[in-house]
Length: 271
Image (cartoon, rainbow, N blue to C red):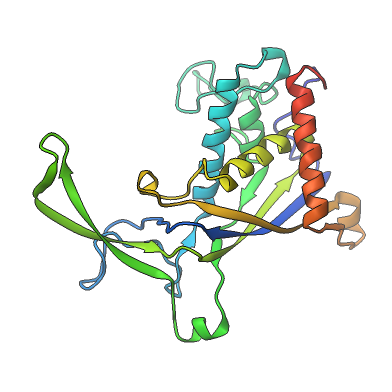
């Protein structure tokens, strides 16, 4: 199997921009911590400067990365395939970017696991960037400051006695089901087999196995992912002030299929 560099940002060959929509299939919540207003919910959702809820790019990236990591670890593929996932929380030689001496010059970026090659490590930047998914609203909704947020009641349960714990009650905000968020994903120097991993992560999100935000064990956080299209642009095209190639959702689905095939070939020992 040919060795590939994880840190290849010195050479920009190609960029991808994937655009789509995240539609809340169930209510979801990305918490902002405690409330700072007297009349607000105990557990509010995260909002932008206009008071509209949004989904941070880091929340999306983290949920998809952890899903793919679990799948790769469970697959138990041969080492020579290169499809493995380190544990970024460990402090030993098995972790990508580990350096006991503190001397970064001794860190090899050529032996990173597949997940760190795609999503980055402590010493290598990510090849994939998720923008914050902002709520899609009409002009009237913006003008009237209408936001699809509900307040629900919750209680603290004593798990030993199986009843409400000392009468403790709280309320929390959720974003209503059906809310639509605009999604943008940027990729630099994409490799087909690594993009296959990303495609599988998107599949898991769309199929409901990966949920977004908090309270997911209560049924919150399921979303539908609908792609609007993709644009591919190379370095030469950028220098010549060209916009690259635009792919509609059907062509994009074919590209996702090629990425999955490249991943499958890699898993079976192909290059």
